[in-house]
Image (cartoon, rainbow, N blue to C red):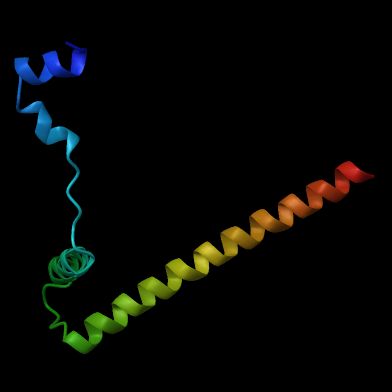
Length: 89
């Protein structure tokens, strides 16, 4: 018997660790929305956060992160190209 078979016989609960469960992307989005709302609610306890304001904040966060990613990629590309030209000379 191979090691895997012996391991399962010794502790059948190890089978659960091998199976990865996929989360529904909609469920993950709801979880992250709830985390963001909870953060805002605790940070600004005296302010009522209307759902329009919440989605505006969420959109601004997404836009900021997207802009950061774009700047980072562009910076890497410029560095790579400039290093190529420096080595060629």
